[in-house]
Image (cartoon, rainbow, N blue to C red; front, side, top):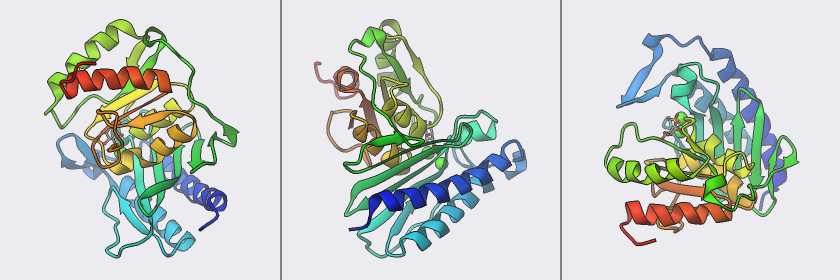
Amino acid sequence: MINLEKICAASCKIIQEVGEFIKGELGKVSEQAIEKKYLNNLVSYVDKTAETQLVSGFKQLLPEAGFIAEEGASSDEENDYRWIIDPLDGTTNFLHQLPFFAISVALQYKQETILGIVYEVSRQELFYAWKNGGAFLNGKTIQVSTTQEMEDALLATGFPYYDFEHIDNYLAMIKPLMLHTRGLRRMGSAALDLVYVASGRFDAYFEYSLSPWDVAAGALIVQEAGGKVGDFSGGNDYLFGREIVAGNPNIYLGIIQRTLQYFKSKKP
Ligand code: IPD
Ligand code: CA
Ligand code: CA
């Protein structure tokens, strides 16, 4: 087994260097350089170049590992180790010069996530965790919040913007949350929403239609910070299942009761 602490430190260095590249391109991407992958799903050379740089760095670091990455890097062979990479999470924010975007990188061993790193480029905040090692922000231990009551909770979510299949369930669910919490934020980066839960800034977060690269790293960081992560039924299918709830243990349960009620038509 590899030394996770060492791999984490080396990966953080690679990620911070790529972060410098991304930061240097902020405000420089012209309209013509923006492609639409599909409805409201934007990409530019910044996402693609960042991915190429990350993949090349991780290939050197761990030659035996494969890849799943948002902009297409992948490996055909079966590998015990694999990286799951979102080179730029929050692309729409980045392209609109809103400072909330990140690099998200997870490492799996035999399909279990063993390392997660999320780097908030603008604030130079590096969130990371490895399996059974705790969770950290720039070298300091982080923990989820201790908020007990929904009334005192600040929640994060992602509004549907291309997959409108469950929009009615979603809108029905957020009305009571708007009425009975401290508020809801739609920041625009799932990876950062998750690590903000891990560091206690948000009490819980939920969203549907996500991909593994959006959540793999952040989910481990939440768990290592003492939080809970699940799908809308409270099960474990949040990585490939396209729905996620994360939170401190109390508020997580409150959100799961509501996802069950509004999305799975089960009585809370
Ligand atoms: C997106 C962001 C956003 C979430 C989307 C993701 P991208 O990732 O995390 O907050 O609502 O569903 O796809 O496209 O910027 O990497
Ligand atoms: Ca993403
Ligand atoms: Ca992305």
